[in-house]
Image 1 (cartoon, rainbow, N blue to C red):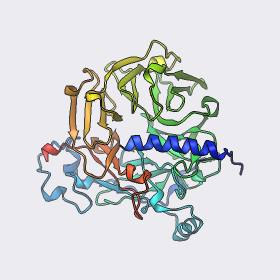
Image 2: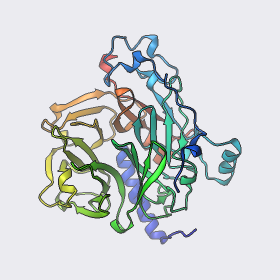
Image 3: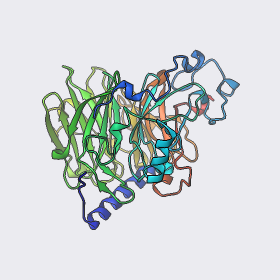
Length: 426
């Protein structure tokens, strides 16, 4: 096993930049047989009464009734609230778990879920290796009725999770499940980034067919990155002739990377300095316009403005003159882009605040057009809003700010996946 080492100064500088970014954010092929250690699918899952409610809790039942009461959480749709934890991983056997614990390859409090994708009754989750002791970095959760504390299993199998094996996944920071059922994972190749960063392998994108759990594509991004690169978010887009493209936010190099999968070509769209006053966190989220075309919205956390670019321009490497200044951020506050609904709606929150807002991108970007769709709790902040299971919009929340500041204690991060609901209808 060959490791690429950096000198102590470079490691320290990278770690400080990453921690600063994260603090701002908070304020090999596997077969189906290799994955049979998971629980069988349960088609009964959630009752139809609950499934028939919409994303904002419009239903004929009062949410305070016993139908929605659960010991798992206080959310109105408690039957659809899932707690995720580094203490609840699915192991092939107890002896394997003991070996990982004794060797230091499993430290439960160092495991956190930061991104998710929903497909039918499954949630695929990214567990970046920010600290040592994360046994796998891409997982799957079955969303089952009555299972408030959900088990996380390695996906698509254990073999593809081996740290130090460049044919395997090293640290997945973002995932996308596209309309064809392909799961795309952005692997930055860098582990222990909050402790002592180690470059295990080059960055890559791996595609897994969720129908048979086989890896169908691996894209090496090594030639597309620079020494300053920090890959953070990813968008998968299809052209009108159904050719796939991947866009990656490179915060450190002030760029959006574009990869034409069918042609095997890549581009780097360098963002103008006028719109990149910082290199903290470069958010990126896509919407689908009424005519079926895509528009990518992006912004640095500390930037005072929101920007967009149409997918058709990214796909041909056209950056200059194609970027649109959408407008100033309301009240001059920093915002966190949380995701989109697969249509024209974007979801966001203000830095350090819990409430989730929805903005219809067909309207002007201003405070009066931001619809408050959920009041957050006291201890967790949303890191993502996504569509999927039971026709809901879902929120992934955690105390990520405590996790990176070593304030979570022995139990580790508090992570919850639940439908987005309006409190004023509870």
